Length: 80
Image 1 (tube, rainbow, N blue to C red):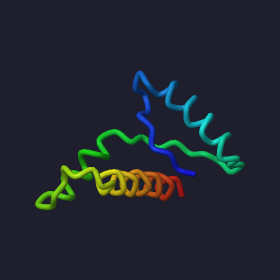
Image 2 (cartoon, rainbow, N blue to C red):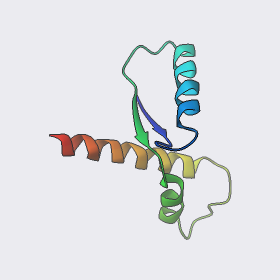
Image 3 (cartoon, rainbow, N blue to C red):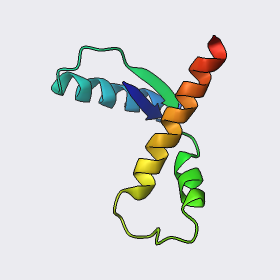
Image 4 (cartoon, rainbow, N blue to C red):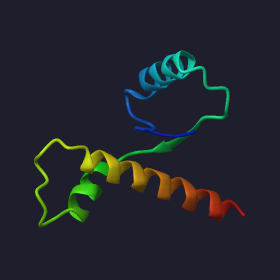
């Protein structure tokens, strides 16, 4: 599981605690990997320029999640 989190920020510890609690609720037993999410929403908004972006339909969040996953995969590829 790849989870976006504000790494190094003042809320990192609190977010890790909340994520651990949530993962216990869904009974997930796999490995959890954290990826810095800094700037992913702004990057997603820039990708959507020209489209209706102020409607809360989840598009920004979905694109942000894609960006976080791409960052993780890039980092993983660099380790090889």
